[in-house]
Image 1: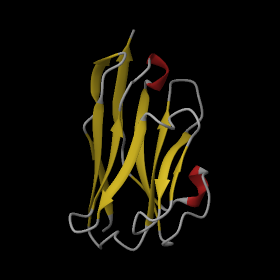
Image 2: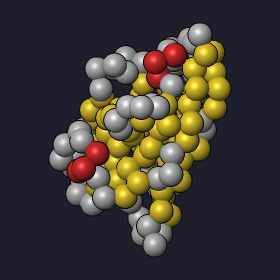
Image 3: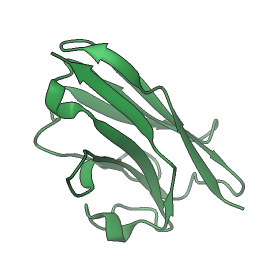
Image 4: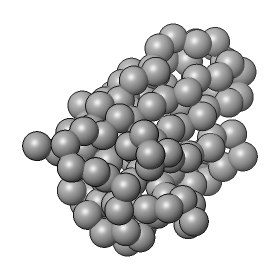
Length: 125
């Protein structure tokens, strides 16, 4: 059974950094596009970043561009999100997701087939 598990969330002060990991198990996800989404209380789930199966195509939300970096290591079946210069408005539950297609089809949650359970990121001011 395919499974995605996020880790690395926590509490950090504004301006700090965190690195999230998304470990995939079951069948390999190395041929799938993957992405990060986040959901703050009372808000809809929103796109953060996505990359194609080999990392050749990468997309970011405008709100995180220049501060966050998404990457993947297919040999380890793991995707990462390096988050720098964190702001209180980055506070949310962060989810990783995988699409069965190799290239990013879209930036909406509906394009993704598999989801992790999420990891909480809290940025204090």
